[in-house]
Image 1 (cartoon, rainbow, N blue to C red):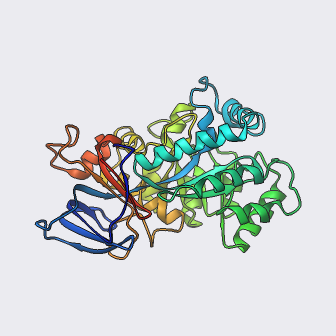
Image 2: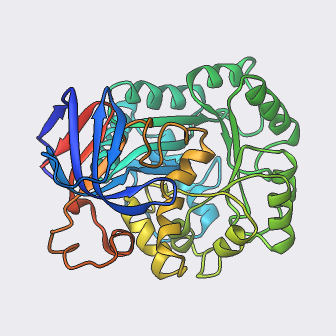
Length: 378
């Protein structure tokens, strides 16, 4: 995609081709009409005079990131705790010693990478306390074509500054913690109540390297739990019974040595009715490219291709509470859409557009991205 061609969406934009329509992403031949940044009409007449043609799909929702790590993209391969455990893991040492302007520039480049690879919304667990959350929130104010949900956390894992939780909630969309083994229980309980009283999200990591933190994390009744890599059948039943969604990060788990084709147990979660979203996790471990995440889920975990695409779009929106607005192509939803070149050397000769998109799609197949009233295109 040519990064230089950016335009405002015209008063009426017509897109035609193969449309992955509705919450089940059924391919239909037709068109959609966008007015005032909304999907106003979807029809089955493919003979319309369209501004853009191709394979039309909703943009991705990346449900778990740490984009502060954008300053550290080539860490040594090491164990999970050495890389990310607060407060002395490698990433925390790097974040604490990186000048603010350098950190902000690196995160801005990652946001641009998300936009160009088809992501319209992401949820970031932001380290660094009030200052860390403020930096990302201010940076997002300069991007009209991507929505970021900043999930902040206290600056120190074992103590709170008076009013810190309220200030974090005033900056972002909620509170997100590393895990129950890293934080005193009374702080976690206070954070849950404070976030929910403010009508905002509380989320936590659990089950990434073992099962020791899963029961207590479920007991906190968070809005979602990240990882659940080592969750067993009993844990999954408790999660399902509590109606708590999970966000899994398969590529990240492989990189840190805690994942496998059976971990996290994604198919078991789906079979038990647990809502699952997908995250790319730490930028220092993985790119924010959701196409790579889809290919990994399809080929390593052997999940159904349409299910994979749903995990990376609509399910993420459901978990973040935005599925009435984004996540699928339906009349009345916001226009957060990517149009791919189905005649590209990579995608041509396909008989199953969903399978091709999931298993082999790449950012360079994108012809145009429509989000926030802006078109990025070739």
